[in-house]
Image (cartoon, rainbow, N blue to C red; front, side, top):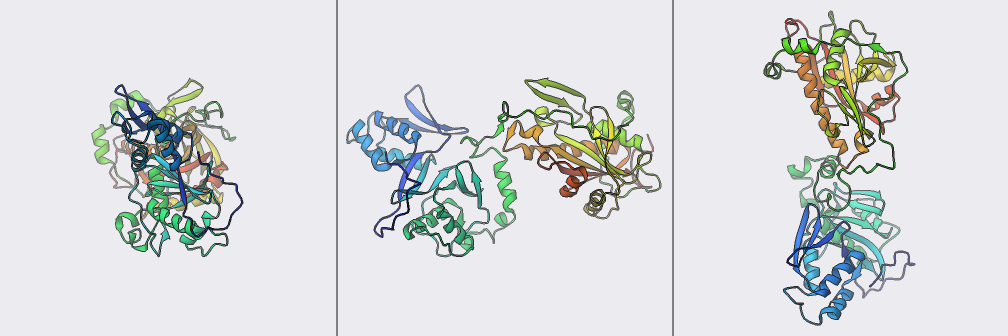
Length: 491
């Protein structure tokens, strides 16, 4: 079979030569034979029936699974195994089989020039028709991302039907030119560069200015990182190609899983009051009443601030750890709100400005022992910044009496899950917000969830490594001002 010589010295361009192609089965694709002899290609959740194949076609699939092959070699293999016909028993010839595999998005295509590999197109789904020529004013898509990977440099986009994997550094010059970086000093031969431009347009990684990215609302409304995050955190075309998605337990046996308990901060613990849950079952408003009366309250009664007893009850009812159990080396937990995989990665940090019975400062809530520990003094610039940013985010409210910063120990989820754990963290924040709103409404506490916060201020105040634990949510608490509906009077 024809090989790609990626390390050969550069040779002079032959003006009469066109770029060539090698084809291979996309990594992560498997074949299976049904009881009737029909061959199926599978990359879960995608599959395609190829029908009954002759010995020659089966041999072609085996060669394609081993690595890049020249199509001429595959045709020769077919003739050697099956003769000059189209095959037997309803099977197709080599050309038709290769065309079927291309149309189904099963073949990676390596583009070469004079025996040197330039780039590879790795399909994720069936491709559109190939353009005959590239647009004259072609530009790199604003959704295209150039990143490093274990296989080298990859160009990808949520809008593309394939990834482009760079084999020759000179190919980056074409990408840079399309991105507006100017002409490259390291150039591909003209024919190879033209083929690459055409393939970038074909892939959906580049396009003319009138392709809608800047003029259509359906495209303009997406920021590149948001569309990339959406595509990467959902099970789609990538999930079946061995990229790793879902609960794969990829770190098991390599890294120890983070424990359910957060490392204790050094300050002395402050014990909090534990509410009588049986009494609350009898006295709390109904679920319907809580849901119907829930609202965001941004202003607080500064003359009668929220008490440490109320704060303790709120934290107990929303975020305490009810149970920890170890299974297969991982500690699973239980709290009042649901959490995917029972990992419970979220941590609560009350930032107190004005609370009766509790000194100002940033605290960590120990959900197992139901205690607070001081993390940072109220005079720290980052603590003050957290409160100021929260006041701005509340739009119309003043500085909150208490700001609950929600931190995420990302390893609790990322040790087990791939591609989706950060999206799962954000879902958990929403679940926690609803729990907080319901509990605050039942208690007669003013509550308001915020849409964003200062992650760098949290890192500075806590001293934590943001790659290990970062802030992912903010929630304001305080006493209800006079005239504001609530259940405080009934309690």
